[in-house]
Image (cartoon, rainbow, N blue to C red; front, side, top):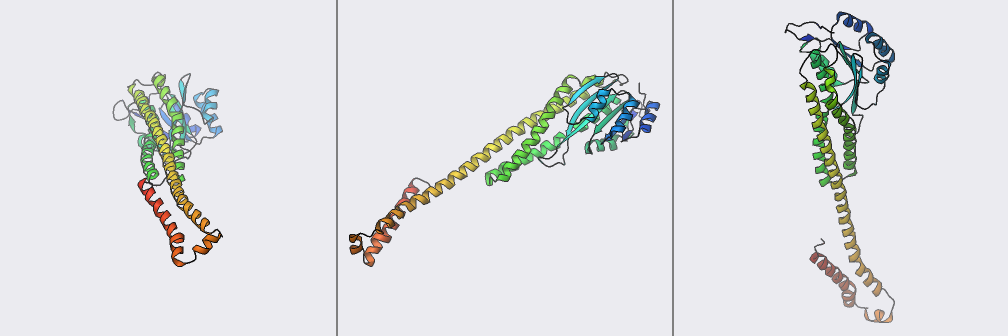
Length: 326
C-alpha cells in the first residue's frame, strides 16, 4: 500500500509527476512507497521492458502497452488495471490525425501513462500538479482521465462554429471546397464517435473498479460518474453535429441542383429565342423566285427581315415574362 508523503494540508498527498523517467527513478519511488505519476511519451521497447520488471507487469499488459490503434478498453490484472482511453488534439486541422491514444496502468502505488506523441493536455496537468498537494490517489487518476476526455469539448466547439460558417458559405456560394470541408468534419466526428461510445460504456460499467484496487485510499466515487456524464454529453454532441453536417450536405446538393436548374433555364430561354430567329433567317435565305423578286427593296427587308426577327424576340420575351421565367 502506498503511504505517500504527507503534505502540510493534512491528509493530502504530494504526487511527483515524472516525464520519461529512468528505471532508477521508478525504483527509487517504489522503494520509498511514494505514489507517483510516470508519463511516457514515445516510450522505447527496452524502457517498457525495464518498467515491466520493476512493477511486475503481465506479458499481455506489455504487449498491449506497445500496441497502438486499439479500441478503448479496461483490463484487470493482479494489483493493477490497464486502460486504453482516447483524447483529441485541439490543434489538429480538420481531416488530420485528430485522436490521441493513451494507455494507463493504474495501481495503488502509481499511475503510468503511455502515449506516442506530445499531448498538451497531460503536459499542462503535470505542470499543475507536480508535487502539489492532492486529496487522494483516486483524485489523481480522475484528473488524468478528465484531462484526456475533456479535450473533446474545444474540438466540438470549433466544429459547431465551422458548421455555422459552412451553412452560410453554402447558401452564398456552394463551391466544391465547401463540400470538402464538410467531409473533413464528418471524418473527425466519425473518428471521435468510434472512441467516445466504447469509452462511455466502459466508464458506465467498470470505472469504479479503480476504487477497489489494493492500496487506493477511499474517496468519492462520483469522480467516475462525472467522467461518464461528460462522455454522454460528448457522445450526444457528436451525434448532433453529424446530423447538422448531413443537413449541410443536403443543403449543398440542393443549392447546386437549384443553380444548375437556373443555368438550364437560362440556356433554354436563349435556345428558344434563337429558334424562331434561325427559322426566319433560314426561310428568307432560300433562293426562291418570289423571295428574290419581292424582297428586293429596303422597306421589305426591314419589315420581313429585321421586323419579323424583332417581333419574334419581343413576343417570346413577353411570354417568358408572363410565365415569370425571368
